[in-house]
Length: 201
Image 1 (cartoon, rainbow, N blue to C red):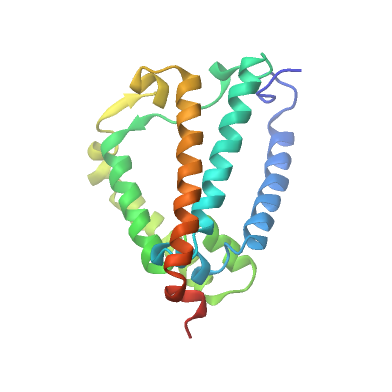
Image 2: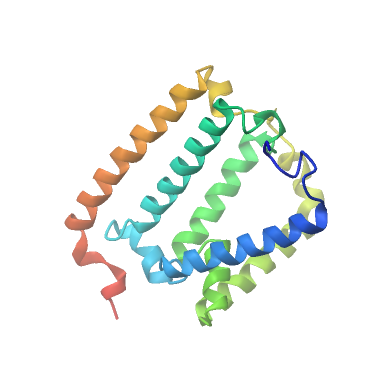
């Protein structure tokens, strides 16, 4: 049996939605158990006092990347059938900056705000409402923003393609980056432990 399973018609749309539902529940549970439903824990990364977010995200990236790389290498995953979003570099940079500013101000990203809301936190509720308000404003303004939204279209491109480097070399480099980031994160947590917002009243 080869992957991706949906593209090989091992199951249909209905089953895929059910699978996605349970994966989403599991992902949300894992985020909450990891403390990602708490804005103080999330905000602590900006004070360099708790780098849990960086560690978890780099772990997830490296795990998924190695899994995809080796499954493709042994022939169990057809990378040509894996869905990739097109790159529109300018609007995606602006969107990333907007999300980043919101993350710094509120302590949540859209996903972690949903986790916070699910566990009954009022700040998560406020942030979650803000997400939908932002979506509404963007949709109303879309006719004015459509030109920029579709600008700098690079098509579907991956980092190895963009840098013209072997896939395996990019994977190896990211693993080294992750190891370096873990070492730096451990140092920062010890250095800035007194600035941890989790301990602030």
